Image (cartoon, rainbow, N blue to C red; front, top):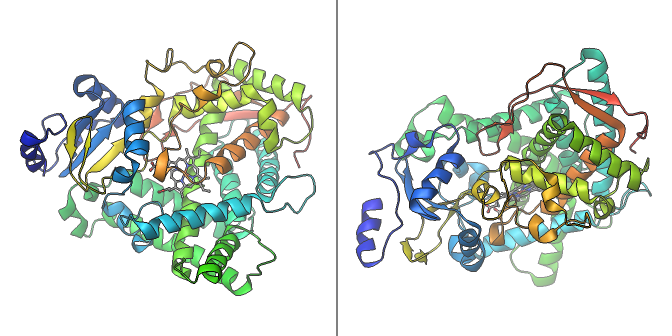
Length: 491
Ligand code: HEM
């Protein structure tokens, strides 16, 4: 393929790139931190280069302007998803996020899912003090999380917050998707949380069958494990969706599943044209469930690590909270009056770049980029980590410094915030950006309003990520104590 591409390049130039081995291509050169290796390669080959992962040619795109060219200006040509083994069994090709079928019905699918999320965001809260259902669910979960942190700390001193965070975020997702929350010790819930974790680990271990196609026919555990985990998750979700289909009431939208059923019914009633069938509704709930889970909990796991690593930054956020909202439970609208807290969250997104690449893209037609010929079906990696650490945009990119996002009046510099690339952009942009930003804000402010987080004495903290589709920090422990000036309840 590469030779064909390069020989075609005699007439139409193909992108430069490193020499590659037969079968394994450049896989071994990527090392433990591929996003850093690709940043190094950029110094030699420029913003657009081509390498081979196993037998698959992969176009790597770096630099804000080139990324905008690919995702915005030439978005239609780069809006597909590659045919990777790991993605192929996700909802049997019906997945909104991973399906290779890009076209009119995919566009309809994304429109319906985004309308359902909006419908839900506007759904009224059961309690009068919250602005919407989402805010209410997050507030409930963070209140439980604070209690769990205090209990763990008084029992064990230092503790790893990972599980408690995952359960809290999973509960927000369950409440959003199915209108139901679970006790942190509920067995069904813990099984699903674990299955989701296993699925992610199995999929992000750079499944060799994604890059060396003949391997996908071998009965190996690493190759087939994701399929088993996915089946278990899909079964759990299908049960909930079927229950919703049976009890749906258009005048009482309980959650995303109801909102999706509602949008589909309305669309069909109004136009008698295509909409989603029941199995597509199941797969959409599955997409939202999967996407809203690991991303947000990983972001919080990073955030608490930075907060104990930089206690002076934690103190500044607490000062801002105390001075502007006091003991009142934080609400989404408070984002406007806590610019330093918002700056901290943007700096976590930028510095950790815990999604170093977007989900892989794929060209939908022959196209050209930066003067190079790019054939249809070329797998494309967007290096968001590079954009977030580009010295031409960021002063001292390796420093963790929330203040970089504030202007001289201590207001948030919105145009700089928009330069942080973590949700992607254009046609394939993340559907849950608003949900995620609001949720993360409430989790961080409500925890810091009530608790002081500290690193354990003599513990060494490490900010180097473990590579994966979503990059986590290495496991760490913290101590949590109630603040005397903080509020005693977040609900
Ligand atoms: C896709 C980031 C939370 C739903 C994506 C993509 C990124 C991303 C980078 C891929 C964009 C691309 O391929 O170009 C994040 C981050 C989150 C987050 C950093 C949290 C901090 C959420 C939440 C939801 C969600 C809470 C849903 C409630 C989706 C969906 C897609 C997606 C459905 C697939 C879009 C498509 O293929 O067109 N997200 N996400 N995400 N995200 Fe998120």
